[in-house]
Amino acid sequence: MTAQLIDGLALSKQLRAEAAARAAALTAQGHRPGLAVIIVGDDPASHVYVRNKVKACEEAGLHSLLERYDAALSEAELLARIDALNRNPSIHGILVQMPLPKHIDPHKVIEAIATSKDVDGYSTLSAGELMTQLPGFRPCTPYGCMKLIESTGFDLRGKHAVVIGRSNTVGKPMALLLLQANATVTVCHSATPDIGHHTRQADVVVAAVGRRNVLTADMVKPGAVVIDVGINRNDAGKLCGDVDFDGVKEVAGWITPVPGGVGPMTIAMLLVNTLESAERSLKSA
Image (cartoon, rainbow, N blue to C red; front, side, top):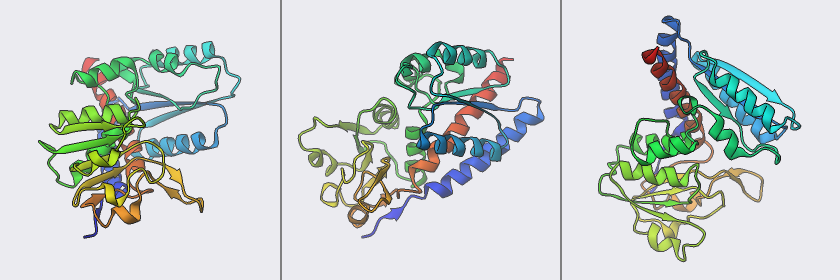
């Protein structure tokens, strides 16, 4: 069998069109959604990511505020800028692009963002809201992964899901979201002796470690849903994921490509979170 592709580009376009309609409705009420994006330093990849986020906002009708700073910006200056944005009623989401220069503590920066504007869902309080199933912002990448799984029509209830990776930004929140969907979840990581032992039993596998060929065809249960979060380069410099795509697609039932899978969904869910923040602020006004 050859797996069906889960088209993240197509799904993200649909979600972005829905976001544009929601943004237009809010703007008509005099409450245009606004996202502030801060980038510090000259990391080339970060500038590409930020440019894509700003473009997506503009296309969906959101107000986008991009602030670029030299790498010499002090931590105190960055925190002061975040504080000002926290108090700005026209801004509903604040995103500080990582990585930051070494002299700036990323944890301190994330915690400085008001929880009501933490559209990345990275703060300690946002993580606690996810853990306890309280309303809050879900980290964009795992949130997008859940939408991709949902798009296949696959029912997670009672199924076995394996997450490869335990990062605070993807692996851990991914496991929690799968648990909330009533899946039985196993988390594998660098200290797991035999990852294949677990993945061969899995109905769903999410690979999120940032290393090529973490998941190969012999590690996959026939018909499984495979979500590839990884972004890597192969020997020829071509973009690839954590999954051996050519091999695994001959075993899996569903699979995300790289590029064109999880990546576009991350930006789509950022828009969704920002709109949700704007809608909440309008209700509380």
